[in-house]
Image 1 (cartoon, one colour):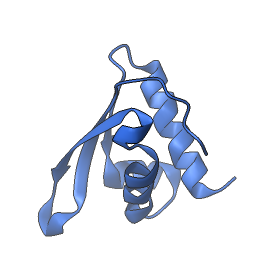
Image 2 (image 1 turned 180 degrees about the horizontal axis):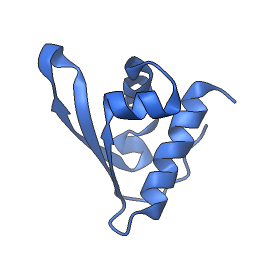
Image 3 (image 1 turned 90 degrees about the vertical axis):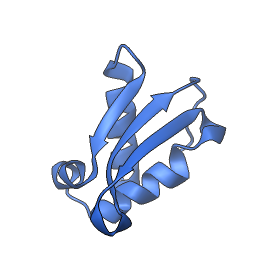
Length: 82
């Protein structure tokens, strides 16, 4: 399984376990848990969790412009293609 698939599956698990269909991700902490580079989190968020797939991402930026944390809101349960 690719690392991007692992990240996607973990985010989907977080969303499915949430009563509010949201997941808050601290990018660096999440990358450490998954065992990947923080930029891979950004890639997955920007390519797989898009409005076209039924997701809204509200991000807070840290120093240097990187995403410090992101809140995902699942607005529809469209199937996500991996």
